[in-house]
Amino acid sequence: MQPQPLLSGSRLVPTLLGLVLGLGVISPKPSLMATETAAGPPPPPRLVTTAKVSAALPKLEALATQILQQTGVPGMAIAVVHDDRVVFLKGYGQREVGKAGAVDADTIFQLASLSKPIASTVVAALVGDGRVRWDDPVIGDLPGFRLGPPAIAEEVTLRDLLSHRSGLPDHAGDLLEDIGFDRATIFQRLGVLPLGNRFRAVFNYTNFGFTAGAIAAANASGQGWEELSRERLYRPLGMGRTSSSHADLVEASNRAALHVREPADGAASHRWVARHQRDADAQSPAGGVSSTARDLSRWLRLQLAGGRLGPVAVGRQIVASDTLADTHRPLIASAPSPNPAVYRTGFYGLGWNVSSTDQGAVQLSHSGGFELGAATAVYLLPGESLGIVVLTNGQPIGVPETVALSFLDLARFGKVELDYLKPLAGLFAQIAQQEYPRVPQQPATPAPARPLAVYSGTYSNAFVGVITVKPEGNGLVLELGPQRRPYPLTHISGDTFRYQPSGENAAGPSAVAFSVSGDEPARRVQIDNFNVDGQGVFQRQSSEATP
Image (tube, rainbow, N blue to C red; front, top):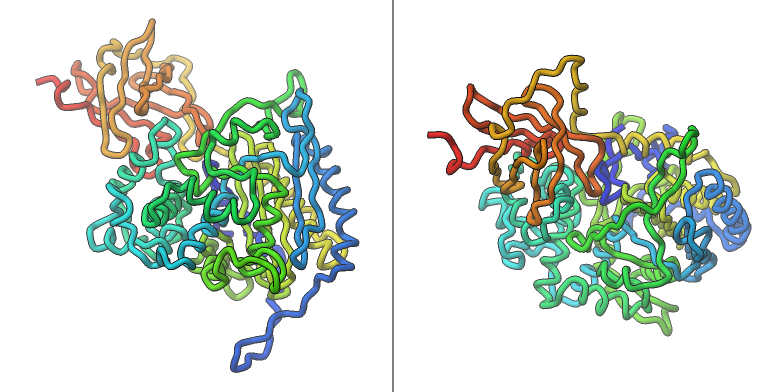
């Protein structure tokens, strides 16, 4: 099975979760076929009725309660929309473990990559206003942003960036955010990365590529992204608790804390703890929106009603229907079929996963996840006028997807077709595994390190920039990023050390290996967690080289 993008903000967002995105990989049943007419095939018959939805809602209530009890995830909020009505809106559990404060429909959650289809809605509004076009090159609206050679750099468009087909390596730029670089610097550094032959040919999920597209659109409109999002979407929709700014989230009292799962002392079980903060302003369009179930129910209605809020006769057209429809159209294969004779391919549009159910209905979806403590999901069946959004304040283990997919089953078939949580939990555990090489075990008799002065010094490469290794106490520290954040180095053997990365994309320790010749200072150092795409080798700065 090929990777499918579910999350954002997490280290390995592309996942193997095609099985839960309606790509037909659970069952080899083909989509229902229809006889084509001059106007195209008729849509598949509707399966969802008001009566079915009404019957499914009490089961959804019981399911949400049961899954929170089963997993221990602290809190959850759910909104369901059907036929332009909010039919379910409720919160469960706690905003923060160990503190008073229940989750309700107005509790603000960090959305992580659920931000992407919201951002593409904002850009669709600009396109509908005639202020930008999907195929506008971005090079003139993003100073310092150039991808690949000039022939490609001048052609990269909003459409390319918002569909992850720019040719950038997967998750390019995320590690720079982790060590404190700002958005403008990350944009500039993306130009260092080779594109190979991937431009418009390969789907690689990139938070900062997507962010570049949204920021280019905002720049072309003459507004900052945060202001534009508020004025062009949140305020007209009445989404008063939604923001693209982390500062607004921090100021809110009714907000959910991030939680991670840690082993409980002396037991095989786990406990949930509020351990981290996550400021995603650098990638705000891709992962920095915060919102509530109530606000998002209005956005679901807009999506399902062709950009309108309210009935046709009296409602307001907030986003042009044709430009909103553009965001729902597949643009690039994101999950190629392992066997095209049996399984369907998954696609990505503009901020949306675009797939189909086994009955042939279009299904739109997107998940969001911070390994530092948030998981969200949205699913739409436009042909059924049905949508659900699920927000949680625990790191991704498959809870929001399980709730959403189970509800869609209940609304269509009257029963849950699959125990989604079990396979999802295993797959999310696989996602959370360390991507970069594991640090080798220290041998029983490690080779001694050289004098610390051999390793000390300043090194650099074009992508990460300048790093420093210097003595501190009886050991060494590695300084990274614009704030020169210090990371202690622990000796393993010979010229190899290790350090513990920090941030959203950190897993276990990473090796730090110096290249030394004779008694001279180290010529270079390789840091494994930066080297997944070949950007982890740093040369000693020439002014420090021994003559």
